[in-house]
Image (cartoon, rainbow, N blue to C red; front, top):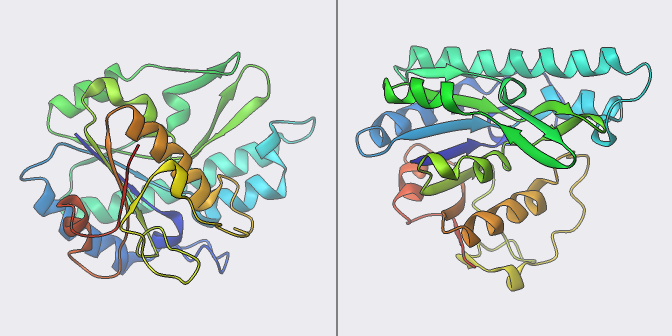
Length: 246
């Protein structure tokens, strides 16, 4: 199974803070997905972009719920469902049989441990349908809510046959200090990533943290940019982006 996460900055104008979607990019990616469907079982996800990061930062939800933050939690959940539906509708129009679903319906945290049940998702996948999930707020027994990044989700689905992960971004992959693409990276080779602004899930640093955990679990991981149609297929074939090693 191949897990593909579409970065929030890739499919939305995240840096501009505009609540909209880059429709042409999603349609172009969908073209690559149709080709990948011939040889891969897919599990799809997308980042939050401004739909999640703006309300989470505004209401301080990275630290959990506080008294009076109910509307902030609601705003975040509704915004993320809105984005998921926008992506899902485009993929449906592009003949990708997706199942849109929120992680909050599957995941929760208890005493710092992740609890989840993927049985319904597995049943849909056996019918030939493709999960399409996203970064989300999930219930947390101690903090009220927890910000679950779509970069983190593949760590918890290895038991249903996960073999490969591609984190698709708006940059070519992991870049060095001069902006050059690093073709292969291990845990001891991480460059200084500098300030990453207001990303509440850690941006590239968070992505690499999840990637190293997956690599240590035996999953093939690649961080790759999507600049034009065909880049996703090239990444899946190991020809593009940064390979993450143990």
